[in-house]
Length: 124
Length: 215
Image (tube, rainbow over the protein chains, first blue to last red):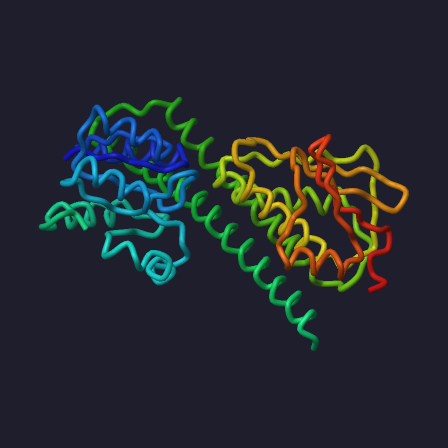
């Protein structure tokens, strides 16, 4: 599985990528939506793990753009919202995406990654 | 309570809520980084148990990352605590430089989301005003918010304080036009402050009288 990590907190994505590598998962990381859109032009990923709130282009907007370029790609959101309820209220229009509230336990993330990769359909 | 007072009260709640939400997001990020670095330490110690040698430089770097994020979280909480206590006394004599620095720090995430850096240049000497501290913070925050919304390609907004005959000017630069948010205008009036734009120098000024309490 090839994973793309996008979060404007560099230490978060770089460390998470190292931890995933220990578990045999190759992850590329970038710290902006713009960098993610550039990377996707030359690289393929099965799954993108996106921060919700990022400068310029939010995670939700990035997902829409990535889906156009890579329709088969799956998504997980990481949110700094206080609770899952907060996130649902703020992103009701975004559909039933998979998301986790920061800070995330690696076991929960791996479980969610497996869940989303087994999901059928168009990645929504 | 008049509509005017109700409007100012609601505006204050909105400001308090927005800043609290921003602070909680930032704390979550600091905690998430601590969590990943602690997790990586755990992974490394697990791998060491399997025979992979530990790299002391790596351990030192992870510990430093954790320490840095703890400091970041502590700074955020200290600022939030000071902000929360600004409602303790309704009217008091405040150090304007300290108050401005606090609001700029609390607005830094809002600015970062717009890809703008806020720079506050403290005055060489202490400038005091007697005011409703929370309402003044609310006013400055509303100005920052509107200025950020229309910042466009301006990547830095500088805030300075300049003593003037009629009080003190809070100066936002480069900014060409006055703020139009009705809540900010209500607060200006409530605090007996005025605003003016100097398009030649690209400065927007809020003029604060020395005593802002004679409302």
